[in-house]
Amino acid sequence: MSETRTTERHDVVVVGAGAAGLNAALVLGRARRRVVVVDAGEPRNAPAAHMHGYLSRDGMSPAALLAVGREEVARYGVELIDARVEHIEAEEAGFVVHLAGGPVLHARRVVVATGLRDGLPELPGLTERWGLDVLHCPYCHGWEVRDRPLGVLGTGPGAVNQALVLRQWSADVVLLAHTLELTDADRERLAARGVRVVEGRIVRLVADDGRLRGVELADGRVVPREAVFVFPQPVPRDALLFGLDCERDDNGWVTTDRTGRTSLPGVWAVGNVADPRAQVVTAAGAGAAASFALDHDLTAEEVGQAVDRYRASGAAVPA
Image (cartoon, rainbow, N blue to C red):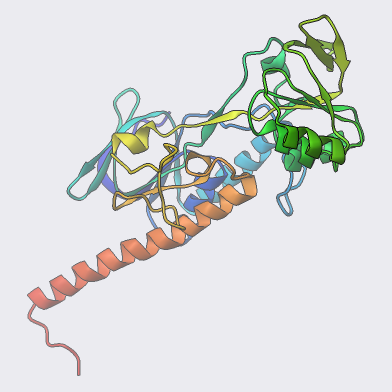
């Protein structure tokens, strides 16, 4: 970690070096802003070998994308610090960003791009297969498991819709009901779509030779499946935002405008920390949108200060 103990005021401190944070830093660096990115090294998609749906980057590993992104932002003078931000406090001229171990950064503006973590059901064997053949997004992973025997774990209300959508990737989709209470309308839609429902509480996921083999139920049956999908509970890593008293919506997520601007002037939140549905490409776009708005915000402040100095100098207004 860089030993950064300076009173130098950065234009922007970006917290989080995922797609959203790095893309924000890239655009701001190209705008000749003084930018530092602080990252704790905990990307959400670290278990995944590949990412998809990102034009020109389809099939690239998430780690490779971030490595390339770091190289690109560094070309424009963006500083990268591997550290954890403990808290952020507002001050009259901007913000003080406190890093673990004592270093302090001063910034005029802050972008929080800390992402989220996936809250997974507590089923034996699930965590070990997460990102391999236990998956969450048909649009991210459906193509890779197309035409195989697939399962959807009934661990939450999103499972029915997930199974209905997943059916277009495979003719063999099973919804393992587990503790899910299905309505008559649910069962009708699933049947009409060709999705079979298997009743019974899930005990564990069965794997051998490094591959998923099936899902074991409480009565001893094992439903053979080559991949299963689960709808995780998204948990935003938003402690920094609420330490700043940024407003939340009714579901507890930070509220932002279309550019990621929060209720606290000078603070933006982008990527999965504000939008649980954002894929990598979406998060990168959100980072770019935030950087444009942020640069305009900084420029407006600078113009106001320049006008004040101009007036104080007694210079005549040009005709």
